[in-house]
Each structure stands twice: as structure tokens, then as C-alpha cells.
Length: 464
Image 1 (cartoon, rainbow, N blue to C red):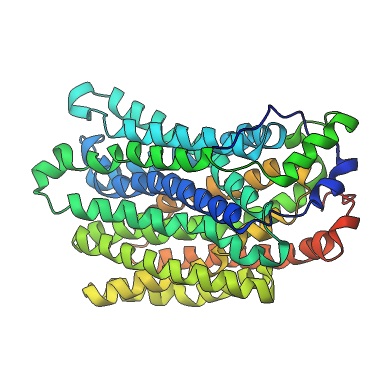
Image 2: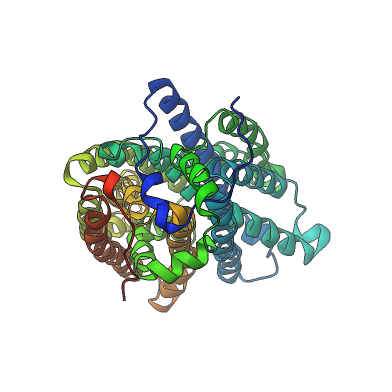
């Protein structure tokens, strides 16, 4: 297990170039251990997060909002689901500060513990019938803590990975933490598919709790892996420089003061990978079971197949990004997702199991193209002295909007009389945002990374 001394504050922006020019980790075994830790920890985070989304679609409306009309109960469940996304910018601010001042590794250890514990406790919650209004209140509280954790997780895992590895391979290496998303989906959907085979009485009584309690086991594995990794060489250089330059302004304030335009670009670029995914998993499960009458096992299995497809797309998309450039892959992926939106829902509307599975897999596969290199796109726009804060805020502001996507989709579905064209149009809007945001990220990446890193000196001003 690696150890490190308590770091000093990072340097001011005047010395940022020297830290950014630090050579990446060269030892293959160190890189392998780092990538494994980033992947496993992120898989736990997304297992826990997606688990809640699946339960919100299938269970929570019945157990925590039993007195409401089924449709209203589903919307209430999705509101608690959205609470986690509202908490994400708070987590981004907290862990962005920790990551920029005290280390990427320190922040990641805290986030994984917070997520594992809060998810496991959901599995111990009594229902509305036992403690009344306290049940949904406690559920929302634990969901809020999940959101705080995720607010710092993705950005930290991505930065620790990219700051250890050479820039010419950032496309493929940035896809490694992203693998936590489909693997987390496989684990959460697979766990619910297994307990979903129980009789309804057993499933709603205790079966749904098992996947949440399993988070305690995954936490031990992820924590062990995270404790064995070294701090980012870029952050180590920042610690050394801080002895000469003193502490900079607060990272989050500096990020918004100097690069608020780039933060908005990052929000748009990241939107499809988060909002589109929840539209094609959380919402589509509810749509298929509640609106179309498709058995929940079919919808869960469809998301499993979609997750397998996503794994393959992430590998391919990351490799292509090494050659073509991450932002170009994100633009093309957004356009492909626009084209796939209506066919995805047309296939699900057939209610034929093979076509339902194909539709979900098509949609998830399309939105996974820009998801592969998005970490390289967003992180590449910011200097390292406030990079954690800026990346976390970009990604999690997109997450706030995305948290309401299932709720908005369900509401639009009601207004359209249950017609899926409303959800397809919503997916098109989300995909277009990512294509446009990624296009505008291109000049920022060329400006920061298109010349010798050793000569970089961050003097960029905010984009109006």
C-alpha cells in the first residue's frame, strides 16, 4: 500500500505549466494498477447509482409512495432520483477543493467510502408502511449523499488516470474509467434481474434489498484497490512548486473566474453521456413496463445487452479518439445519436422481445460513442491547478440537468398521450447539445494541448 505525506497547497497559476509538463508514469505495472483501481472504484460508484435508478423505476414507487396513483408514484420516485443529481455540484465543489488542494487520491478514497456506505444503508431502510413519512425522507437523504459522492468521483478517477498517462493515449485511457458505467449497469441490472425472478411478495419484501446490501462487499474491494495507488505526478509537482509560490486563490472561484465559458462547453459536451444514458435506462425501463406492459425482466435484460454493447463501443471509441482526436469522436457520436433516436423507440414500441432488446442496445451503443473520450475532452480544457474543480463542476452541472431527464420524459409522455415520439425528440435535443459543445471544445483543446507541453503557460481568459 502506498503512503504519502500530507500535501501543501498547490501553486498559483503562474507555475501551472511546470506541473502540467511532468512526465507521465512510465512503469507498466503502475499504470495497470492505476487503471484497475480507477475502473473498479468507478464501477462501484455507478453500480450504486444505477441501482437506485432501477429501483426507482420498479420498486420505490410501491414501497415508499404507496398511497399515490401509480403514475404519480413513479414521478415521485424519479424526483428522489433527481435529488442525487442536485447534490452533485455540491459534491463537485467539496471534492474539487479536496482534489486540487490535498490530492486526487485523497478525494477518491473519501468518495468511494461515502458511496458504498450510503448505498448499503438504503438496503436497510424500512418502507412507508413501517415508519411513514420518515421512509421517503431517509431515502431522499441517502440519495443526496450518493450525489455528493458522485460529484467528486468521476472527475477524480479521470484526472488520476490521465495525469499518470501520456497525452497521445488519452483517448483510449480516458475510456477506462468510463467502463465503470456499463459494468456498473451490468452488475445492478443483473442483480435486479436475479432477484426479479423471486415471487412478487418476496421481491418487494426483501429481495430488492440484496443488491443494495452487496454494495458493502464491493466497497471493500474498491477501497483496497484505491489505497494501493500513487498520487498523480502532476499533483506531486504542484506540491513541490507550492513551497516557492504559495497558495493560489480558491480553486472553484478561480475556475469560474477564468474559465466559465469552458465550463459551459464542458456541460454541453458531457450531457449526452449522462442524460441520454438515464433516458435509455431508467426512463425506458419505466416506459416499457408501465406504458407498454412489457415484463420487467425483458426490460432489465435489454439494458444488460445494452451495457455489453457499450463496453465494446467504449474500447473502439477510445482507440479511434487516439487517432482522430477526442472532440471529433464526440461530435460524430452526437450526430449518430440524433439519427438513432426515433429507431430506438420504434423498436421498443413493437413489444417484441428481440426488437425491444435491439432498440435499447442501439440507443445505448450510439450514446456510448461520445462517452468514451469525453474525459479527455473536458479535462484537456483546464489547467491543472484548478482542474479537479473545473472538470467536476462541468460534469456535474450536466448531471444536475440529466437528473431530471427521466422526470421530464415521463411528463412529456403524459402530455403526448403515451406516444414515444416525445422521448425521442428529447434524446435528439440532448445529443445535439453534446455535438455542439464538443465542436466548440475543439479550439480549446488545440489551444492548450496543440503545442509543446513544456512551453505551456496558462494565460487564457474566460470565453464570453
